[in-house]
Length: 136
Image 1: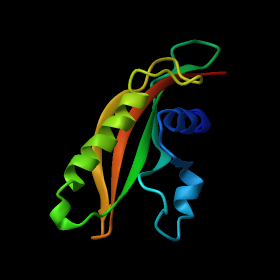
Image 2: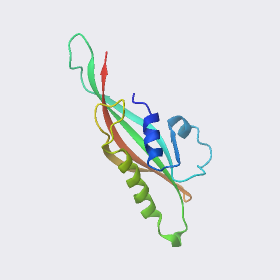
Image 3: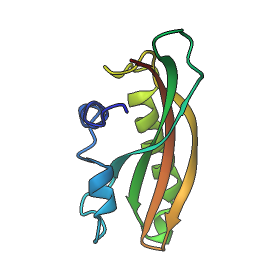
Image 4: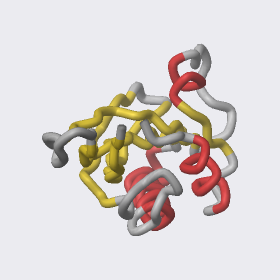
């Protein structure tokens, strides 16, 4: 598995004040006080077949979901959609083409999706992938 801390550090360096990992996201009981709030969640890993005889050398594609939580704004403001786009762009700009220290290639964009909306908060997932090699 690719370590989460370098991703958190990269997003903080990009100017996000509230960035945490999957354990903090799982333990979230109250809405975050600072928005946008980001949570780095490892989503899936898929591995190719072993390429070597006698040792294991597999290419693994790790998929991460960067959960972006935004606070609701007054309807008259009409900036909610623009804010989602702007913050999602910031996440992508910080991570696409960046090479994680544990990875064998750069992060690539894999899509986005609505995770939840409750009238007060919106959670959007930015999905990214990064390859690495599993060698034994």
